[in-house]
Image 1: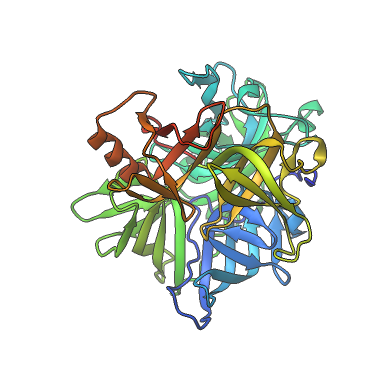
Image 2 (image 1 turned 135 degrees about the vertical axis):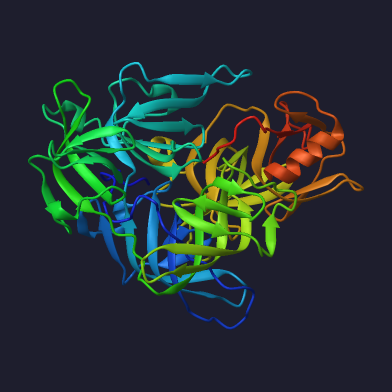
Amino acid sequence: MKHPFQKALLPALIGSIFALSACGGGSSEPTANKTLTTGVITGFGSVYVNGCKYETDSASIDADDNPSASQDDLAIGMVVTVSGSTSTDANGQCIGTADRIIYDNEVEGPVAAGSLQTTTDPVTGLPSEVTVMILGQTVRMNADTRFESESDTAYGLGDVAEGDILEVSGLMDDSGAIVATMVELQDHKMQQAQHEYELKGKVAALDTTTMTFEINGMPVDYTNARFDDMSMNDLMNGYYVEVKGELNASGDTLVATKIEAEDNGMEKGEHYDSELEGVISNYDPDNRTFTLQGVTVDASNVQEIKPAGLVLGDGLRVEVEGKLVVADDGTARLIAREIKRKGEKIKIQATVTAIDTSRELDPSADLVTLGVFGKAITVRVNEQTELKYGMLPSVGDFVEVEAFDDGSGVINAYELKPEDMDDAELKGPVDSYDLDNMTITLFGISFDISMAYMSMDHMIPPPADFWSAIDGQGYAKLVDEYPADGVIDKVEVEVESEDHD
């Protein structure tokens, strides 16, 4: 069911990925709002971004310098910008109409020699995080990163090697590293004699005599570059550009063939209902301000933080909803109304109990129901879902599902594969918990954890520390150890890793 993955897309979404859409509160009457949305694609059947389902029938899709791209050129895990309008339906869910969708990778180039660093999980011994350098940029990949390859061959976290040419979509963290949400191996490009790479960022150390500048420390030679949407005279320190070019013989300078001004999609003097997803940096606890993807966020009057115990600080990945105010000089400030923890993908290991391929309930997807600790959880499976052997499993199969919640309770499977019978597991965002009745609620479903022991970073913690971590992290994993009997044996939370995708 998976489309062959297209070469990842365009330069037109300024590297400091400005703003996102938001839907208004719980009104039963749809009220359209002008929106500008940036976030990670979490599902298809239209396009799901930041909890909103965008109809794309009349949208122009700009993909990798191709303004005539289609929805088939998009994939789960890509960071996109959507301009259009949104409203709230009678059920309180966000629905939108996209006028334009833009995708732009953060960097494309070879994994530098000597830069590969791998962290392994202490229990499984498998890679849990891989850090590399690509064109001078630090790229961090983890178990939540979506991997693809141009040839559609298998490629994952444990396969990353020095010299691999990777195209990366992701979010900038507080240290300036790219936390990858989507990585595509350019294995077709690796077979070519010459390679054109891509890098975007702010111009620094501009030298008009030698015709060089730097982007995040990477030297760029623009002697023979052509310019698009700008001229050579427009170059100045702080100007945001995308550079395409080839590495010089020593591999330490990007020789530009094309330099393009990046478009952030914002109009000066406009206000947008907006959501912005990213990693907090420059947090000021006194003024309650921080930076998210290059945008200043004012959280001094935030009305709601989810989960309630979430402590703001540098390195935390969040989604901020509020009003984006664009000044006449083009600078933007997001006045926060709601802040919620974002990140980790959903993982389910369970037995298939039902399959609905009629598409009567959802015209864009098949629905697979899983029996999880005696409860039923349904996931969407569509053209973007990677299926082992290219077909749906059968009722009674034990499967592993990796998915994203689109923000409105819809679980979009991006990988579904049969597995040998093992522990039954459910990992996802915690809605609430009740210590008196010893229950925990995920996806609106309450689970009995009265027989479970608590684990934090693979150790048994003091109860107060554990529940404090649940409040702060917002994600938990429930486990019914093999052979599963429907009783939850363990509730686990991990707090060592700051970034999840």
